[in-house]
Length: 130
Image (tube, rainbow, N blue to C red):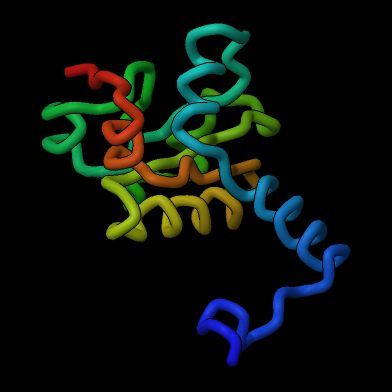
């Protein structure tokens, strides 16, 4: 008898490749954001989409606070239309980053989610700004 892991067969390798490659177009992780922010030319805007109170209590260094409900063409006007926005919220238990990504995509803006959010950032051992 097979394990619960193998009761549903794994996808064919070519299907798995397409799936996982596509996911990288939608998300990035805390380690890559940290590395890019500290060792490379930062070619994205990191958006903390939580409330200003939560942002003030601690956020990823270099992040701009723009709560999801405040995302609009007017608020984004200062950024060129091809600016990549990387969004995050509290963590895996929060869908705020997903909601923000939807709004940005609806406005025609390139967007990725920083998976793990603030919880992931802290779990990686990275410090917060206040």
